[in-house]
Image (cartoon, rainbow, N blue to C red; front, side, top):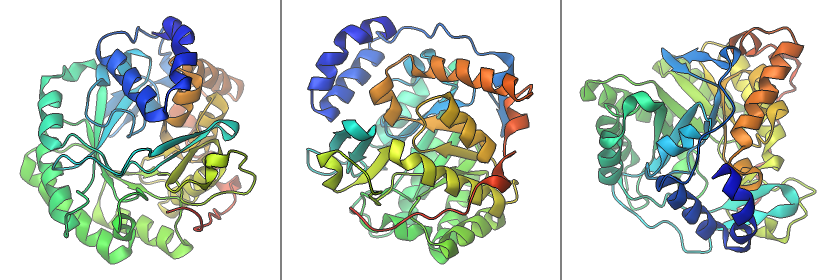
Length: 364
């Protein structure tokens, strides 16, 4: 597919974004994805949570919601894949259209609303996959019509824990009403207690992470860091999409409601990453996501405190060779600065990164 992609790219870009994405995922699942020609160099290897990541570049949740093509995505050269967000029961999500390309801004806006085939489908597919093929995490959320979120998360954790290499509690999507309220200190403490107990009940112990929003107050950021350390979870993903609309967006679609991702999110999400690294004193591995489109972006996330990096939106614009290009460039940047491995560069710039200042106005 990497070679074929450049022939079909004009067709994909002419289609509505969600249709193009669905066709791409179907092609990958059918085995049309090909294999990356870029090797995983030893200096890109990263051992986190006892897991051996061949490289630190992963696919963020949202690309493969229902575990349709994790192995083909790994073959494109990614070091890990995160599927989901998965909800316990199937749900269709928000009305279409709900994804918008901001071509001039290198960005997307989505208001998908946790469209999901449900936990039964994902569990079935995860049971069928070859676990030795690569690292696959599972990102879980609540059903829109669930009055109490905790049982949804607990059920998803219990059932996915034996099958996932790591688990992510998504409390930060802006497209499910009330979801981001779970990031408040008391709510997050209560939720994490229940999901940690659910993981214990599963008999498995995959790393458990929480994914946070970029649109947080200083108090909320400090609370999340304190709760994460006290609860004993294994890491934090920084960050989800933003409801803010930074000045200077040129695309008319910027007025659409939903979460903004891509290039405009890079600076605020990286500043937030650096702050969470400082607030947690570097004691929790972090995954940096938001606006990663090239090796320089990935390297900046690592230097700001990320042990691993994820992308999604850039794949829409950069195509299936992007992982290989980032890996090659990242290795060169490590060599340039005298680092023999990714781990040596994690957090080296955190003291130099200014305090985050992310607005909370905009679409919802």
